[in-house]
Image 1 (spheres, helix red, strand yellow):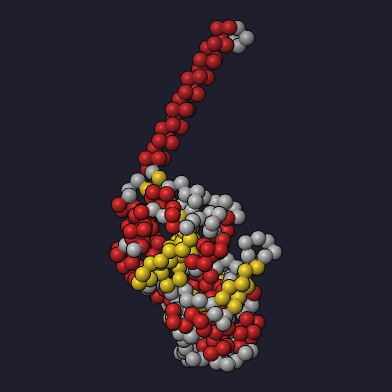
Image 2 (cartoon, helix red, strand yellow; image 1 turned 90 degrees about the horizontal axis):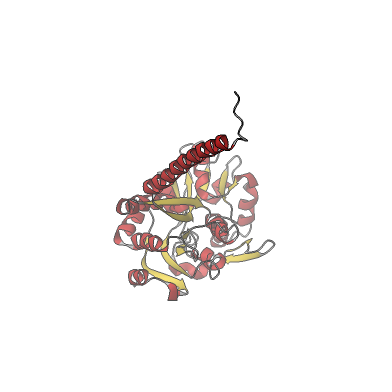
Length: 332
């Protein structure tokens, strides 16, 4: 006889079976969630400049070694793009580290961050390979002339999203001034196709390695990390010398501002990196510990091993009233 679930007994039997199945499913899901938390633990989310990828991966390993229940999630991009992911898209991040400390000052403070620790320097270089045209001929004095030769391809990163991009343009302007060749900057800019401008500087390396580009503009640390051939520009235009800050100011570049349709004027300055903890950081205590590691002797050694110079003395900008006592002590 066919069962009729309209009968009370049959209906209750059906409901009972359904509830047992539901209970089993919920138990499985609960166990899965608990297991996931046990395996992965807490997450520390860090947005950072592409040029910090190598040292931050090493810092991640060192940090997770002493924090086995913590997963450090690194997300690399151009520094201005990283800041906009926080300010415009409102993505969650505990830490933001920029290749230009001024990006944090301009785009994150005071709405999304309180302070900004200045921690490392760098220099601008021209990176190339054995495949590059005129690789045996190029040097610190003739590089601009080589780039303008017919058939030479070179690239740089997008100034609107990556500080290495606008610093590349500043190098061109300063070299023009150093050589007293007013036409040089415009020639270098017009000779470089728009397609040779990439979102972040580290993306250019793959294109250099396959021979699509002959030369790319990179930070010295990145050139060293990838074992590439490179020349460091003259001190008057490599943006590494604190004593030449006034001369660097002769370089002026406009990039997109805080709001659509707005532009920000940037002036040449020595390269200085900055780092902050966001106001909405979900793991502030872990973020403090990570930055403490980065600023420690161990962290300084990691940066040196990666070809990047930590500042001799750290400094801080912004509202330090909310800076943790631990970091205040480290910065002293």
